[in-house]
Image 1 (cartoon, rainbow, N blue to C red):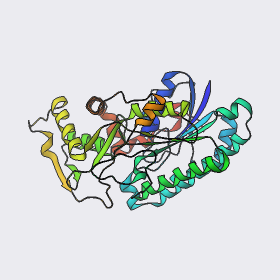
Image 2 (spheres, rainbow, N blue to C red):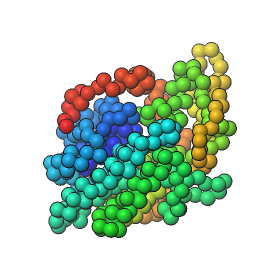
Image 3 (cartoon, rainbow, N blue to C red):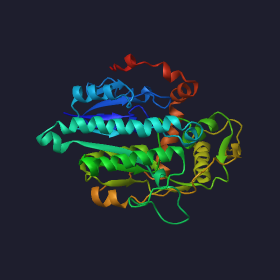
Length: 355
């Protein structure tokens, strides 16, 4: 049984990956998470009792703790997702982003490199450090073109700048020390269990609560949308089969303006959960001042991962979004506990977790 570390496994993407790997049955997962506001152990309730799952409440910046964990669990690799990730929060409080995304990644690289250096034979040759990043490091596109793995970095927010810095550290550790790494840069994720500060869950929550649906500027900013379970499958594939030192872009082939996303959500909600007053949810749309430095367009060229590793998304935007809306409608208690903050009252012992 192969043990893999997943940092940030209580987050949105991390929890989807943990659920996938536990379901596949070939992995033992050690989930290392600081449990900041976006970490929610309730998203892992379905796997919490598995003997192949272990939760560790820890900060990746704590080198001594990380040293102990590597020594104790002897992983075959690490998939590093732990990060501060919300652009708006980075604008108002960038320090946490610098600390976690840059210093935390540096700490993990050094601890993992020390552990890897002490391995020998097959254990050393099989070990790898998978760094999970974002398409936001590339900056903003014009009306045409796609981000490729060779696109120059041009981050425009404190969040994307901190992720770009961590990407460069990972690349440098490979070229300087021969440390075995792979990096992935993904487009906007959506799906079940996403913290409701992000566009899609925020709009769903506000709509069913009868609140305004705030849209930045004219709503014409464009993003490529990727269903989170498709992303999880891609991460597992790159971790297992990606070429060391390489970068793989992961996208859903779904370019949509923010306004298109909101309009599609409203139409789905009209179908799945009609308003009692008979009005359309689109009547709740409202336009607010654009955020500073808001990138106009992101779009991923995911041809490399398809060509080299055979990955392609299983969900279209329409099928994935319908699944997402239905999940939020079916799980109002999960949403309510996140919005109220009650989810933070769940302790490690609720899930048989151990530190």
